[in-house]
Image 1 (cartoon, rainbow, N blue to C red):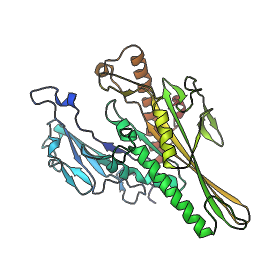
Image 2: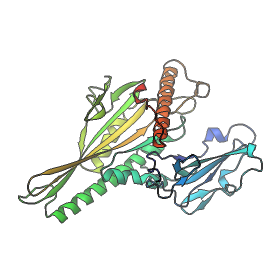
Image 3: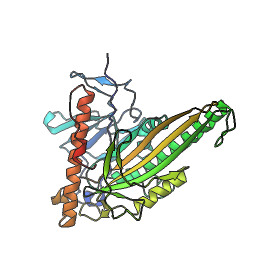
Image 4: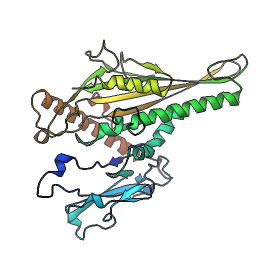
Length: 366
């Protein structure tokens, strides 16, 4: 029997060189040494139907590869392929294996990729949340690699400025509204009401937004608890939760995005040598969805799901970021929590491959 499809998928997005990097060493500046070979669709397979089985018995739905070469390659030569970006040199590797290394991922997006391209790759997670499953998106990478831009966009309400979280919220509420209306039409009920003797379905949502700063949890939506360290608890029914965290009822995309904007104003950011607006905290946005279906005889069936989006603070090297004092302490806490997260992910992957492993999730608030 083939193993169940893995629950963890990895997408890589490569940003273009910034001005400081392009004007770096040498008379022509730095060059991009990444050759990107994207899949034909760029969409992550969450079903496992297209997975490849390796000799160790593990499975992976490889959707794209990145080749790192010691010989600088010009990414401006990249040409668009069907649904992805394929470098002219991507199909050929160096004659010497020592000059290049290849890494495979579930999906890869190059420097010309758009926010829409990235969202379409992970849309399966959003669809799963609407269907009643929990889904989480974690943005991970070095400081200045473009995580916050990918997740939250430019902060504008326009379609072009929207990031992953705005696009996910719009898709979620659109799907929830259509599903509720369709269910009530099919069941003979009314949207938002419960006429006697009829079945009806009602879907509600609550949003919360908090940050983990120096291994302390702060509510980004409450002025009263903005300076108070909240406790992380564990309950047999709730699972792991933040005690005292404010949850805001949201009924549409506009209200959810307003919660997002309100929280972003309170997030900890600072300037470093590598990033003018470096995130100094891990930001966690959670949308809890509750669907209640009431039958004609008064019985209720309740389905809950959570959409979680985590914008991690970037990993840092003190030598590169030139941090000291409070900034250096923050960087140490960031790197420590990211290391713990890596241990947890590795343990989860081992367990999916049939190995008995303890998942050390209590080692960090993250």
